[in-house]
Length: 265
Image 1 (cartoon, one colour):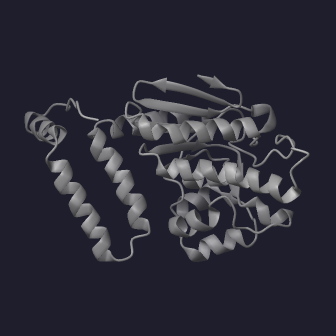
Image 2 (cartoon, rainbow, N blue to C red):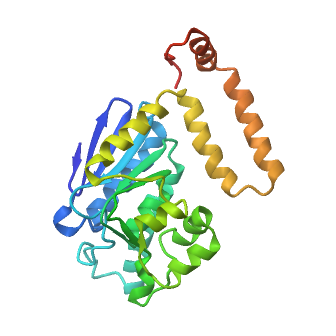
């Protein structure tokens, strides 16, 4: 499926979502954001897609907002126009976190502003050696907290490192990102797709419901009100999953030293 600024290829249970505006460094225009928002929102009702890989064409992952890519409704005030743009982009990050499928991001070159937030909203991040990320907003007279950065970044790297980057807009290199746990691994740019596909294949060895509920618990327990609440959610999920046919198949496959064949979604 092709939707202007975004190319989507579904390879069995793995979907590869590609930002496809290399001539604009994959900057976010309205068609791109509409396509991403629609796709990630619809994933809630698409159990046949089990893992999503997010990548980009060209030398940059996403250079941020394309200021010329958002047609202005002359009847709308500046506040209403800006609010509409903000909310459209914010819904993409929210849909990425809410969709039950794990999102594996592969990034190279610049990931600025909204591009940085796309990475933060993903579940696993692999970086090319030349990846450089920043919360660019504070450098153009706005606040450094935008598009989910103030929510995601402190939870991923801690408040001190998050403050360092959000209060300055400075660039984070791939090496620094690896050191503070923001990315899982630095991989040559040409090897990023294979790295992501290999991880996706590992995820596909798990039961469909187990994979979905694991992402669900991870996201919910980041904001758990207490240790007891986190344990309670885990306990309920495990009891539920233990009763599924897929769990019985996984146990049998383990005993028989073979790959499981799952049937439930």
